Amino acid sequence: MKNELLPKRFSGLNGDVYAGFGPRVAAKILDVIIMLPIMGLLLYIEGLSKSAYFYAVVPYLLVVVIYEVVLVKIYGGTPGKLIMGIKIIQKNGDDIDWRAACYRYSVEFFLAILAVFVMILTLNMIDDSTYISMGFVKRYQLLSSINPIPNQVQSWLSGVWTISGLIVLVFDARKRSTHDFIAGTVVVKAMTLDKIREIVNQSDTEEAE
Image 1: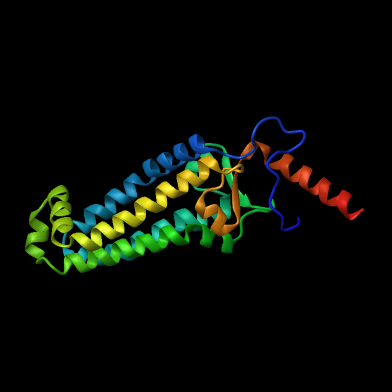
Image 2: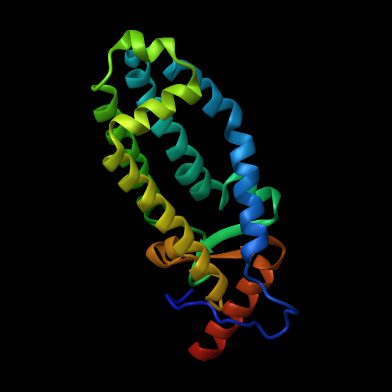
């Protein structure tokens, strides 16, 4: 297929082929639910001691990369998206490749690294006995209060990224979010994918003739 952006509408397909706000938010909620056991286990390990937190950082980052990059490349979406019947493809209709999958998660990965970095800086401000003695909520409140500016900046950046992505998604004709523009991807309804490619291939053949 040519390296061109898929059209906004497809002749012969009724309705919108692109996955909009509702299905994508629902997919994200499903992903959170699916990841809860793993994230809960990692949070438990992190709460054992400051050293345990440091040891859990790499597994945490590895899990999110597998979930958001590897699964997307192999299956065309996270489990939540696949359950919702939507798939991520490249803007020309081809399957998503490794480069696009990495680019698509690049900003979120940077924000995850930033959050870890800020937490490590903050943890160095308290002793291990204080860290262990507190429950999750009190520990979070303490860590937020003793190093407020970096925590607020990290939280603000994450919030801006999430909100801006939703705004772009709502107003873009192809329902592309900010990470779709970065990666050169679109998210479509899986049941329309074969027909989309059939129409695009037919168009390419007619142009070649």
